[in-house]
Image (cartoon, rainbow, N blue to C red; front, side, top):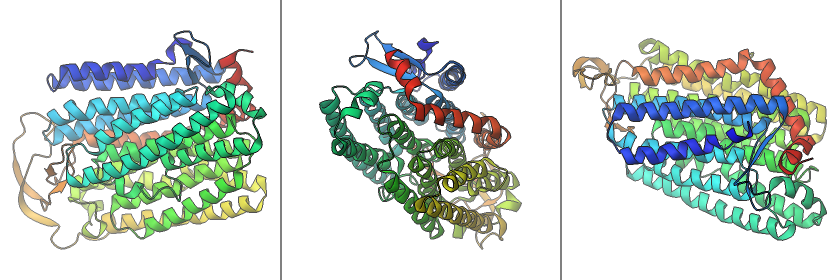
Length: 537
């Protein structure tokens, strides 16, 4: 079973080479290969999660070189859960992107550029979740960075190049800081392997250990968009195509949160910087949601809610208790899915209404009732309305804060409640402006000539019908303008519906999910199962 651990990383990388060799030819085969590979990664992730939960962490030393020389990959309950959730989400986003490429009648760009970069991104995410040492965690980040720049700038439009440049500059700064932290860790401990560092850092002077902890937290806080290191995010994500924005917002920031969970519990037990994390969590919650309140563009608004809700996860990490970590793990799994879903819905709204500017939208509840349902369910989930999974995660974190009983913990409980109410207000604002009110004058035009709304089916002809005005926006994968349609592309809608159902599945399986997160939190705090899996008893 340990031999399966490297496959979620190797499969996407190997298939990427195959797809690049095929090029833009054999479109149907290319689509089938992409879906099959990500489906296989999802199956492998589920197997690793079940086995890690049943028998304990699974570790493999590539090339049979023992630490500290070899590359170690480890799948425990936490990494197995993150890998499973991320694999499911990336598969759904891939299907969405395939539907968007077919609806745009643009096969060459998605297949020739987008999907190879997307598979490399998936490999990088898997590498970070399975990395058993700091160097390979860094490698996973860099794989994601290379793929991310390609995905952010696909199409070559000026706004995308500008946003991608900002993202790369910030990411390179964090990478340099990460390299310095790795060098410091090796100089004081003689290894970068997590299991060995967990043992050797205990003998390092407290000041040096605290400095190393602060440097790693800074790196991961930039990746996770924790305030005040989150200013880059609202300007970087909204310009990208809907599938890119969705997977970035839903998943890539959680890689930073995962890294914080892993290093804080395994390498730096003792809660030295706990109050600083709680302060950052509170600031992220409040300032992020206030930024969302002030926005009128849907994508920027959702970007600010992303910053805000990262604070919930940092709240649990800062508490450093079993209940707090368990609540954070539940909330990470929930938020990956729900935030991705909302950005997919934003892409459908843009295609239906021609814009994501809320002041120019309206009447979608009547003209697109399915789209209204697809937005309403994850919106209420994000707001934490009972009994949805958002409520389960927030309740677990608040209970952990009450159990802690400290002043900072009570402040965070109050801040969490206020942020949840403001999130509900923001979701209601979107609903009222885009869905509930009457359509603004000029939005509906009679007889606008459009590409067929069933453009993903070969042989469809152009047609004329009452449609939203054909407002051109750079929303396609290749950066071209897309014309609004009255009926949403089936594949894109199906993928979004699957993401909504996945979020609801967390509610149905709330008990097992909470129990799994609690066991994962206990394993993180105990540390010995992870260390013994890597180094032996």
